[in-house]
Amino acid sequence: MAVHSIAQQGFGEGTNEVYDRARPSYPPSALSFIRQSISKDHTPPFNIIEIGAGTGIFTRALLSHPDWSSSVKEIRATVIATLASAELKISANDGSFTDTGIEDTQAYHWAHPNYEAASSEFARILKPPWVATLRPLYEKYEEGAPQFRQGLWRATFDPAVSPKYPTLFEPPVEETFDWMIPTTKDAVVERVKSKSYITVLAMEKKEEYAGLEAEVKEVLNREKKSWIDEAGGVFEYPYQSTVVIARKK
Image (cartoon, rainbow, N blue to C red; front, side, top):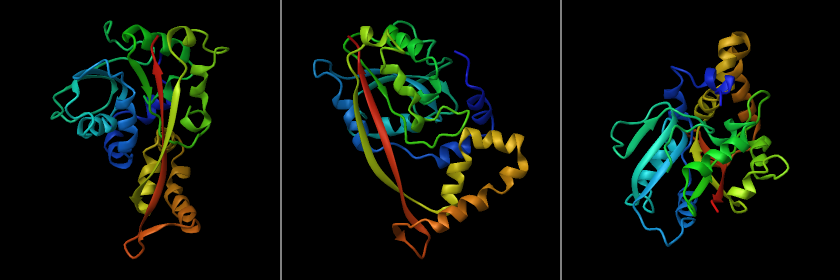
């Protein structure tokens, strides 16, 4: 599968530091849910394949979580940008959602429109009854970028679009986790700038990009906030994190 052009440009060299700093981690409750989805017949330590590891935000959250910290033997990470060298349980591999580069043993929405091929690849590298976990964060959709909110990734589970899925996996189990992080206006601006299509905007439409910061702050000024520290400019930033468990037959 070719890397999506917006992802290729927007997450290219020089963008990783901002992405890693601006993007949120994952709620502990979601990580616990994933751990509880593994059959009790299988005991740790586990070998984990993380597709779309990026800068390792999820990887670090997993390794530091009490349900996982002593349960991981090795993480094989693909589609990788940067990972801290201290994370000794991690090995990096080139690969995509439809060709992981993992022998028989981008966030998922970037697999669009190759969900059928992705399901086949997940089934190839998993032994039953191990699970594939999709963990998209809530994202705004922008034209040309297959973001989570548009729901294109749900085609994975639609037999009319992906007839192979029900032959390979049990019906999906989905759970949504609402959570909040403390943030500031400047942090929200940086969060917006970390998006792939905004990075592309900076490359191709510099005048439009130049006014982006003022536009975002204007919107934030109009919106009602739940203040944590109004004098310090810190307010609550709501997130939703959806986890989908696909159990191999």
